[in-house]
Amino acid sequence: MTLTIITADGDGWVHGTLYYDPPQDGFAGAPFTTQIEKGAFSIRLANGTRYEDLHWCSAALCGRFYTPDDTMSPVFLARAP
Image (cartoon, rainbow, N blue to C red; front, side):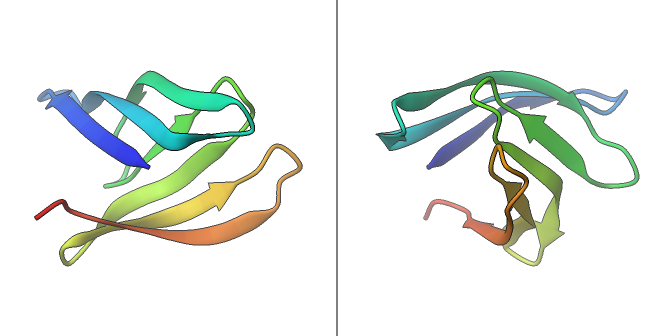
């Protein structure tokens, strides 16, 4: 998965892209717009998956990943070197 934050403005709006390579169940990802609230943000995708409570934990972005049936797993996204 590649998560790219394009911009974050002073009002807490975050714009970016999230892509899967290879695609997950035929879904390759999409651009997104979301808002930072209490230091975290969420990304909800058209295929029914979502990332909740994304926030920085040292050098990684931490949060929770939910499948369309609400199965949850922790997620840790490391910054590219």
